[in-house]
Image 1 (cartoon, rainbow, N blue to C red):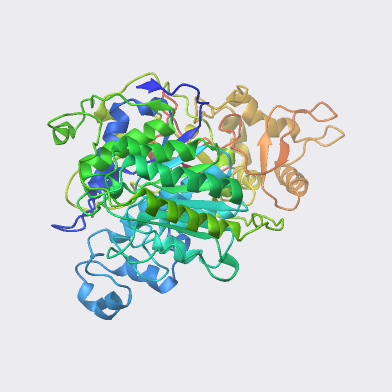
Image 2 (image 1 turned 30 degrees about the vertical axis):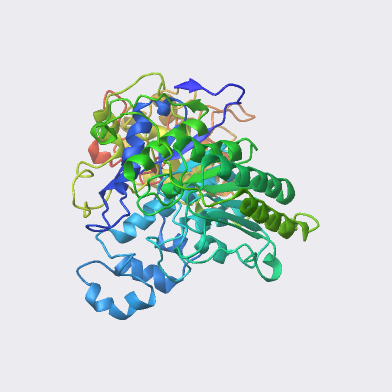
Length: 601
């Protein structure tokens, strides 16, 4: 693994869900999700985890899918399974489900994983949390608004682009799958905010669309670029058409972000494709697009010779991280599948290239003619970015502290990244495994390294309510009870439990020094909180009179301190390692139980 000379370091977020390999389209079906697990095994054993952050994205919900797909279609995918398929005979015909797009156990969960990774990758790019996001489980470019097509049910690409459009005026979509990216083109065929560019085989070949003259309608006229090719195109000829077209498109369109669908069925020897690209010829497209230094979302797609797909996507993951992987494949759980060469390479064959130089020149000129019809890139008036529920998540994120130089055994990675039964043939694994975003590099089981989110209107008032529930006779003994910290890694000044519990007592006096009862003190704090707005306490600050008082801070999606916050001693207990006991159910010490919930990064 050698660094690529002359390249600046790019921040890479890589999304993988170990459950993706459990799903099976059926015997004899060419689409095999296990290829993504094989690719991930290579990525880990090459040591690429040191060069990037690895995440398990939250699966997309029905509501998120409905940003593009119809509610009826999403509900159909959610309800149907092999056991009740006969009850949905009419719907199967309506939504084109049953042949190329079969019904299998866990269909909706499979779609959720694919879409969730693409949407999360786009969101992190938009919020400048990374420069390149990778989701090889995505790239399902044939799915339509209310129809499955070409092994694709939910169009994660469209959902990811919609996320990018919330922050970027223009988004460029590039498709190097051997099949035309018809689903994405159709979704944005009438808009100028997304330019689609598909390089594909055209003719008597699925889906039968993508002629060079198909370039959009209405406001989107000229913003759909199609490069139809013939069988057997080589690395050299592919480069001669890809680089000039993409360079001209990027310079003219000036996108704010790029989505690159890296379908590997354009490789030589693919079971369904008919191109003759080598692994390095395919990867050269990724490297060329990366060289423009724009936010880049890398997605998977087609690819039906699994050992070629896993090799290529692992190699391209290395390029995204700024390194070139060695030729010898390291030991991994799928090592025997890479024989007899056991090398990271997919070679071109000696098949005939039917793309003559004259034909390629004609296609280039036709594409450039489409671009010449437009004077300049379209502009978008300034507008407020729509607010979504996940927008505040990254603001609260605590960075992972694990050393990337420590190589852990594969079995330890597996314990974090997959369920116990994720390598079995059963897709019905129960719930609880993919409930939150999970950073694969986390090694701590407490809640301090996860996202914190408030669910109550006023944690302070809840703490006051808990205090009011304690009889006044027992208030002295309650102050002597130590409050344990739930996090050993919170970056706040150390505060003893005595200081925490005594703060309300020291503040419970009037200006004349007379004792103030707890009801009056609660009333004073409530009125200072702005009528019930979200607040949090910082102990140890002094008012003008010198008395230590709780400081009220208006909440603005900040990480809640896990130390130095008063809480009833019975709500949270900790072990010697600082981890919550099972009885606490993951609650953090705070104003009251249930004030915060933990989510993985």
